[in-house]
Amino acid sequence: MTKELRCDDVFSGCAYVSVGSDIRALMAEYMVHVRDVHRVTSPTPELRIQAMVAVRERQAHMD
Image 1: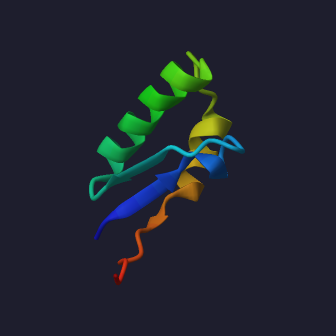
Image 2 (image 1 turned 30 degrees about the vertical axis):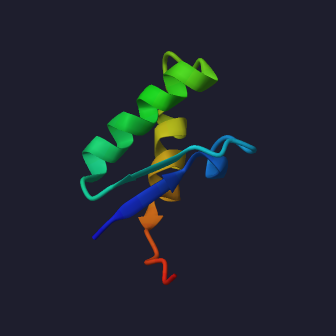
């Protein structure tokens, strides 16, 4: 199952989307984004929880 984390769910207005099947890799990739783009070098436990809650199943796109 593929999961996604839309940064807009945590940082309003950010279009970044992290996608992956491994939740640990997805969160690690997202935290790199948070550090590099949002300049958050020490994410709080609350930020990590907010990001975990924002993870959802990726919907299959039918084109």
